[in-house]
Amino acid sequence: MARHDLTIRGAGIFGLSIAWEAVRRGARVRLIETHAIGAGSSGGVVGALAPHVPENWNPKKQFQLESLLMAEAFFASASEASGLPTGYARTGRLQPLADAAAVALAHQRSETARSLWQDHANWTVIPSPAGDWHPASPTGLVVHDTLTARINPRQTALALVEAIRTRGQVITGDAPDDEPTIWATGIAGLADLSATLGRNVGAGVKGQAALLQYDAATQPQLFVDTLHIVPHSDGTVAIGSTSEHAWTDPTATDSQLDTLIARACAAVPALQGAPVLDRWAALRPRARSRAPVLGEWPGRLGHFIANGGFKIGFGMAPKVAQVMVDLVLEGRDSIPDDFRVSAL
Image (cartoon, rainbow, N blue to C red; front, side, top):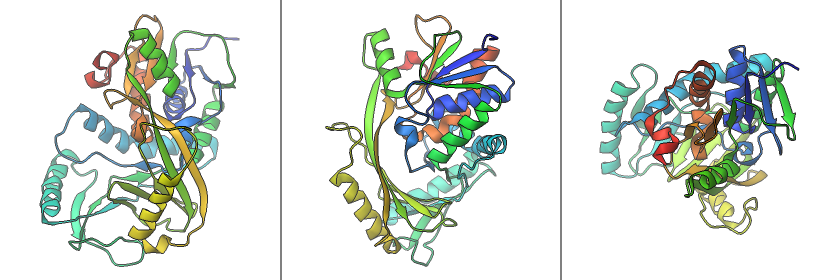
């Protein structure tokens, strides 16, 4: 068998996206997943691709902006190659404004967004729309941003892996090491990196989410008091998510999820009585820097790391794939300093 140009270990959203980007560039790719495709946090239900607020701009926010703007074409290419949907749609997002101070801040951010986002998207203050889908706003006003998109995580994993299989090799199980190798192995990868460096560089944060049967496919996402309410194209609505630093069972759901569902139904009465189709829980890899960890693996020549997606992995994935393939296969390093292992 011919030698591979690149091996990727881990078929979460970072590993899948890097493999697909390399395949698109004509590389001979081997993707290895020892458990299951989309295992862990990439097998969730929420799929909110939402931007950071347009203020206090920094390289992380710029990286995310570029990634969100790349997302539509990137995921469409996987759909075209695989014949499978990803559920991607840039449907925007509404956020109620609680008081006059929130309104003033939102107007300031609107001006900043015009400068930072230019003509790619808008962040505007508008009257709260009427209708059952939209939550009440104490001020009668909401933020409407047109950059936020949705994606179906599980559909996307399937589309990406089938796209990779059209021109690359996917192994479910294990295989001998090769070089170069990118380790996109989530919680296990952060633990291995911590052992390498002799200090804790990150860990898992548990999240719980739910999927309800309710058709709001053409409606925008809602962000209400830290709660994501995401309508999907298949007639479901995702509710998420918790952030838990202590737990007994990392994959079990409990009363915290019941509270999320109750909050969503209180915010959007149309959801009351909607059947709960799925209750999901898993650990999400969060680096100490709260940014993705990208670049060379210290002390392992020919080995690299792509980890730490946490809550924004799907939104960051297209740009992560681009810079990692640039680095490993083309020798071009454009990784932000805050994303490097040395920043941990």
